[in-house]
Length: 193
Image (cartoon, rainbow, N blue to C red; front, side):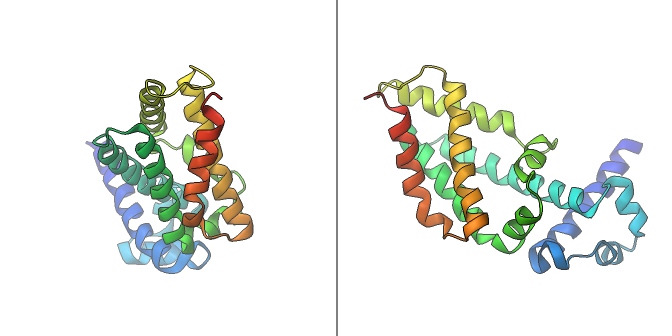
């Protein structure tokens, strides 16, 4: 029962934080404002999240979890593994660009962003790797790949797309315009010549 109450409070804080981070961005969001919206003290937020950065990381992880799980469920209906991979890149890049106001700003402040997000308990890393591995495995049934280590190729896929996101952070490129290029780059790297 006590654990349920704790989780309920944590989720209420995360929902209030969602409103503030999406409306005001990371820098302009204040924990005092979130606490005021919930009629709690700032200390209550610190009981659940050790810092504003950790609260933001938890908010973003939860948001990404919902998005990734939703995408995986939609993509499973796509029989063509190439289209699955391409749609994953498009979906991810569009999400990042659409939410630039709070994502890019935070990433600029936190060079360990990807590690923080992926190590959070909410991030569905196993589900994402399983989805990508299965897609690549199905692809291997139609094309000769440079490796039959599909899990490694899934991690390479994530690393490649992370590289494009990192360039977006550093140079401000329009990320969705790079989706096709990222897809082609990955496919050219994994298909045996």
